[in-house]
Length: 410
Image (tube, rainbow, N blue to C red; front, side):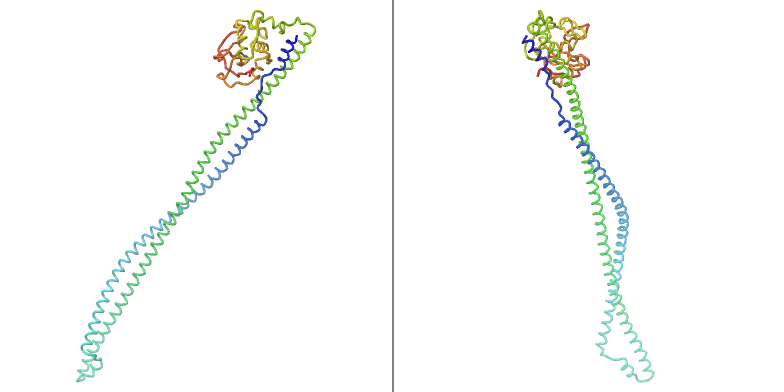
């Protein structure tokens, strides 16, 4: 009797372990998603701002290009003017040389005339006239004096004119050289100014290209991170829903088991005829001639379960020898090892601890399919109450699509 009570108590209190996705984990995941979404919005704003600024720089480049075209035309004219100035300087230099030669020639004549006056003695035009011997001689001498005066005056005027012309040509040459230098300096400054302006704008535009590329790369990284965070959040929320459903099912199963335990306890208080070796008669009768349940591992569970291969499948049944369905088979076997699991395949899919893949499965784990459940026995094989045609048989774990793998014994 005491053994029966112990088994019933284990059946009523044993539940598979739950690894709840906590509210804090879910909230943290949601906050990460929101933070990443905000980063994406901020990054998009930066991209829009940079594209706008780059467009403005591009417009400035266009304007500067137009300015450059105008200045290039101006520069071409300046170069043409400089070329004309150089030609003018060449001509002016030629004129100045000619004027200087003429001045030199006039200077030589003046020197010859002065030397002749010096050598002959200084005789005034009046002395020449007074030396006349007669009136007719005086008239002749007067004509000579007039010619001599005219000659000297002409000689002096030509010298003065040649001197002034030479000075003027020299001054004109100097002025044209100054104009040429100023034009060349101005041209050089214009070219430097334009090159600096255009270079600065191009550097700025290229810098925007680099910044935009970096920002767009960051946008792609943020989007990828957001997708990962959303997927993680969805997994946490789905896990929480499944765990809550499993917890609810476990609670319902425990309540049902407690009710059954109370009923069995009540029955054992009046009679012990309903139990054999501490196991209810309706289950003990199934085990006559079979190895009794023993051990504490998943391998012990499947070793016990495999001895019923060949027995019948009965929908809704829980008898290991007279007939059971898939979930009745797994529930009854686990109950004999002290574990209470839900009655249906759908609820067993939500019970116990989730196993992530078949490679990680161990003997005793439940392999869950759509509306069906089986024991995993290792090496990719299962034992299960398959159908009314096949009964309890061995099979491949992948004969159908696996929806989940649950571990009852940790």
